[in-house]
Image (cartoon, rainbow, N blue to C red; front, side, top):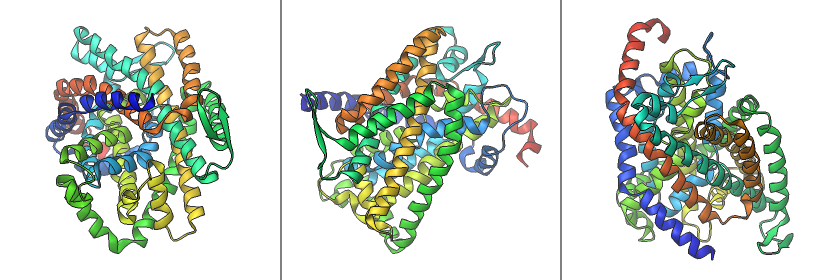
Length: 472
């Protein structure tokens, strides 16, 4: 049954993530890059400075840094560790090249999303904030386009409940825990009608479900508070591990870069015919890149809208640092580690197993220690991603239902249930389903960014002309 379901999902995925959507996302980023005059290069130092310097006096629910951490909590997750591995396994090392291209253009996209989210957000008398693509579609493009905002919100709910928010993250956590504590399936239990699973998977799912429930019941402020502590700490640890692998294998880096670039345009030249065409490499790289950094997806602006700020441009700059950190830094390190160590060429490895092999063979420490550290990073990254995507999907549902919080509360418990059953889904089906929902979210969001690119360019020009002193 699962084989047939996988085939159907893969067919749908191939249609959704076909050439038109890839062109839409890359072209959108290119248009914004041109209209903003390479803002992602010129203003990156300022953006990194403002990233940790909260604005005073702005209205919103959380600080600008907390909003970024909430967004990063949803982006720095399994996409960085497992997603990069699956992209390279399916599309060859060249997939990493296209991931980087999409990320570079995506920085401009993420800037535009953050700016528009704050410009068109709604704040009620209680200080409750709601904003994101659904509002900048409705308010920016006009009431006649409200249906497009509804389409985005619907697929946002689906992505959170059935895709990137739950199943992929929980599956990544349970796989990592099992691979470390019970790689040979010694301690197993048979669940009638479902299958045989390691006890580590069952225990991990129970503990994770309880932890997720305790945080989600506290709402957005608790999610932001947890993310603000966990995300920076675990990101620094992962980056240090990645740097150590690169430094210890520095002589292999030039060859790895050649393989990545060559594989982007002629995959068969470096894979020996195992991987097909350049289109496949591009498709996997762009799709997994979007999965990881969410530029163009429209999810991050939902968190950006909650930031305590008066300046849309300022929040746009802070938002764009998320893509820089997530893909240009973290995903690049993962990809280089996989290519340098040859992990992508090892047979019978998939998902987190590929990255684990790279860390075990790339770090100058015992394999048990390196795999434990990777497991720890994956668990915490995926945990915060689960929290971030609950926030996103709840806001989407709030927009769909006209602010009916009773529906949101019911959804929250369904979300917790999805976390509980996530480990028992098959890996390939989980990732394919997530890709489909991501693509369906990206379409209405990218249409809006094209239409409103002039607004973004105008707001940016006015802000920097009037606030030159704020760059210092």
